[in-house]
Amino acid sequence: METRDNEVVETTSLINEQLRKGGEIFEVIDHIQSLPRPIVVDFNNVLANNSEPLVVNPAAKEFIDKLLSIGTVIIVTTARDWEPNRKFLADNGLWNDHMVLINRDPLADITLSSFPLNPETEKLVGKQVSILKGLGKKVEPEEFKGASATKRISHVFGKSYNVPIVDDGYMAVIDNPGMFGVWVEKWNPEDSDRSEVDGVKRYSLKDAAKIVEDYYKKIT
Image (cartoon, rainbow, N blue to C red; front, side):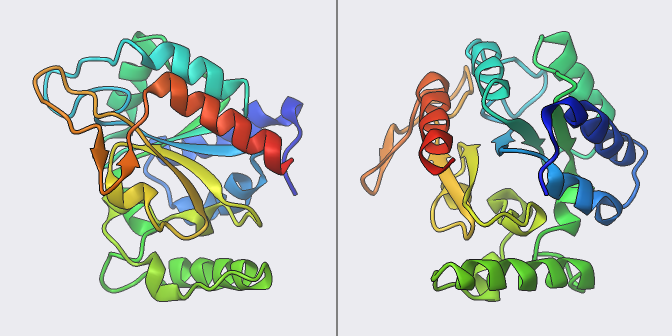
């Protein structure tokens, strides 16, 4: 059951505190699954670049503000430490109590890339496969396998619809089971970028926010 709006901050605060102190993400899975309209957003190369010093994407503030008006933002990063990333977001006007930040270790725990495989993750994947098959979709547990960067994590949300993910990584947005991928332009002031690969277009953050908004209007 999804959390009502006046309970969202209480829920996100509980989740963030658990992750900030390095606690098990599995202890707050029920809370994550209660969040309304989750929207997964990649941190590096989307909100900021991927090298030191971090430089914020000038389009990030408008993008995040728009997403927060649509649903619950879940920022994911393969960076190790939770608090420095939250502080960077806060210092650049991107942090909001209605969002969740998932850093490297909990992200690794919920992906089918770690060895030995976490039995809790396997259980969540099994449940998500059953949900998707119940909707007539052809999907197998093997399709959830991948490195943390591929963010094959729809099982964490347990939704009966595809959860939007905004990412600059091709593998995170293409054929990601249970996720609705929006491929965006890579933000790196010192790097060039291809706007299209194999006929799949990259979008600006502004366009990506509109796509997510239209998606949720269509399914709700």
